[in-house]
Image 1 (tube, rainbow, N blue to C red):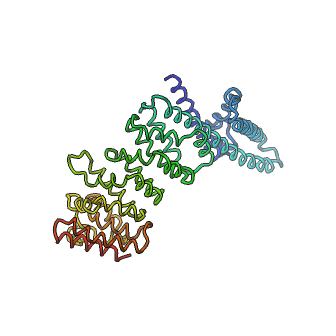
Image 2: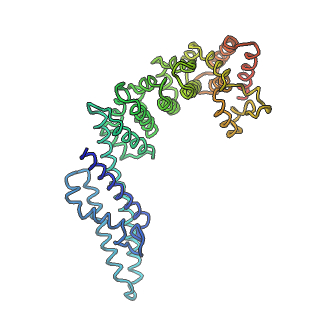
Image 3: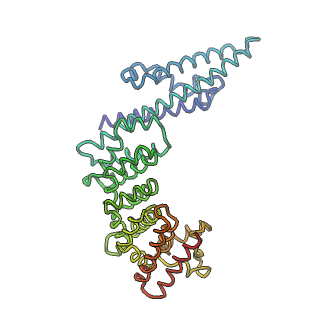
Length: 413
C-alpha cells in the first residue's frame, strides 16, 4: 500500500509539471503565470520546471527513456537564464531594440521547448500508468475493484483524447490490450471490472481501428461481452459501440459464434426473467445495428430466431405503440419522420417515453437502407418480413397497421 501511495504522489507531481509546461508554452513571455514580462523566473510554472531540472540528475539518470527529457530541461534552464539576463539590460540606449528582438526569439524557443517537455512528461505518465495497469490485470489475484476500476477508467479517458503515436507505442510495448482482454474474459473477475474492461476495449478500437480491431475479432472479447449481456447494461453499450465501429466484420463474428440468437433472445425476456427493460432496449439497439450492417446470413439468423415475433410483442407493450396511429392526434412523432431525419428532437423525446414504438418498421428500414445486403437480397427479406408480420400479429388489424409502417417506411428510400 505504501508503494501505491508513493506512485500516486509521483503521478500527481508529474501532472503538476505537465500543466506548468503547458502554461509556459502558451505564454512564455510571462513564465506561464502572473508577473511581469520576460520569462518571469519567479512564476510558479517556471519554478516547477527549473526545480525539476535541478533535481533531474538523480531522478532521470537511471532511466534511458528519460534522457530526452533531461536534455530538454537543460535547454530550458539555459533559455530561462538567458532571458533573465536580457531583462537586466533594459534601457541601455540603442541596443534596446536588438535586445527585444533577441528576447522575443528566445521566448518563442522557450515555448517550443516547454511544449516538448510537456509531451515527454505525458509520455512518462503514460508509461507509468500502462505498467501499473498491466501489472495489476495480469497478477494472480486481479479482483481488487478499488485498484482496477480507476486504472481502466484512466486508460479509457486517455485514449479517448485522440490518436497519439507515442501513446500507441507505449500501449503496444506493454501489451495493454491483451491485459484488458484477459480481465474481460475471466469470469472470476468482478463484474464491475469486466464492464470497465469492455469500455476500455471499445475505447482502444476508437483510438486506432487498424491496430485493435484485429485482436477484438480474433480473441475472446466479443464472446466475453455477449456472455455478460443479459445482466450488464455496460456490456451491451460496449457491444453496440463495437458493432458501429467495426461494422460487418463484427456482425459476421457474432453470427459465427452463435451470439445473434442470444441477443434476439433478450428481446423475448419479459417480466420475471431477470432481464431489465434497459437491457432489452439496448438489445433492440444491437439488432437494429445488425440489421444495418449484417449480411444475409446474419439477417436470416435473426429471422429464424423469431425476431419479428419478439419485436411485435415489444411493440404491443406499454413501452411500444405505432407511430402511424399517432399522426397529429396524440402528440407523437408523425409517421416517417424517423426516417426522413426531420424533427430529431421530437423523435428523441418520443422514443425516450416509448422505446419500443414501431420497432418492427425501424428494423425493416435498417435492413432496407443498410450496407450488408444486395438489392435482390433486400427484396427476398421484405417478402419474408410480410408473412412473418402476419404470423406474429395478434389480429388482422394489427398486421395491417404494422405492414403499413413497414411498407411505407421502405418506399421513402
